[in-house]
Image (cartoon, rainbow, N blue to C red):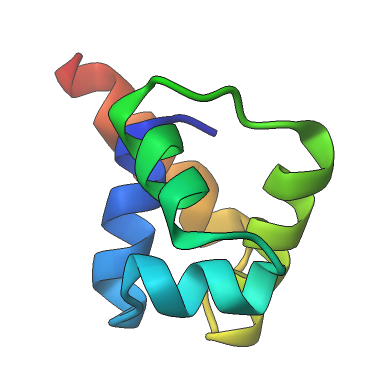
Length: 74
């Protein structure tokens, strides 16, 4: 999971950085830093983020397809 994928998933689910951070149990500044690429995404935080997106109806298959599309554009 990379910073672009998180941004796109937030956009799809209409979640702000603050809303995502609250649901993940982290501070908004961490989500911002992850999206900027200045903070590392730990496995625990990644799992929590994926769980939030799953709760919003965006599952593993959709995330994998979106990730593939994003990586082709890089």
